[in-house]
Image (cartoon, rainbow, N blue to C red; front, side, top):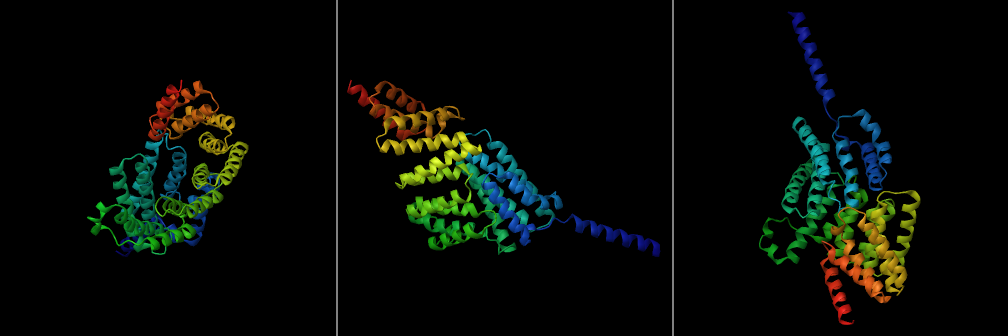
Length: 389
């Protein structure tokens, strides 16, 4: 009898030991992992996947089945997607990556309820899915994914209240809950379901997140720039945030393009040209990712700067080069810069007295599937050219 009891007890101990071994650790509660994860995310945002791997490989080797690694792969691919949003061929693969990470996190939560890492994965993965569907104007699907992200975030607040990334979500919630009823009167009729809003507090939370968050530090900075530019109308402050992103992630083509665009819009043309020239040179010398997309956009803005100085021939040359990149990138006629570049190339040609080629450029603008304001301008120019014959 004792032998049977001894065997049963030994079996029970082994089963309990096996269960303990199978437990997936909550890495986010480890301070060293927080530092390594923050450095890895910074590397991904700077298009340095090898740097991210170097930081995370020791953790991957120790916990190879942890679903966080699936999320990090999705975050890396996000920058492939965001670098050229006109290319829709990668969307399904991205959704699949993030949904797999979300599913793995769901399984982990079933086995270990309240697991902090799994809640982070569900929050981040569904947040990215929501953002990309919004980029495609698929609002119902975007809202469904956002709801999943928010539900996970709600549980995460209770589990890891000191997680600095939570401040971004809280800041966005506070800001938009105040902003939406102010700007859209129709929202006031249903504002009872919104949480109490506070724009200054929301912005403060986002500033804190931009300094201390692990996964969302750069995103918080981006939202601060976007909100200050589009809603607060504090253009110089907005450019400051975009400048910060460009300096922190100098190999990120999206942030370089964003900064140039906003420098131009705030009439800081000399600064814009300086950034353009340095970025074009660096992308060429270091053979950085998405060179064609970068050149399509930055050559356009450089052409606009030269056009303002009445340097029509130089400007036209840049517009023509930019247009050539548009024609060799995916979904040419749907690209935002395609009609804009063609219009300004026509404008430069017209001012040089080359009416024939100007008409061809304006016709190219009209060929686009987007850019209605430029199409309207091109039609007016073509009408004026016919009248003056």
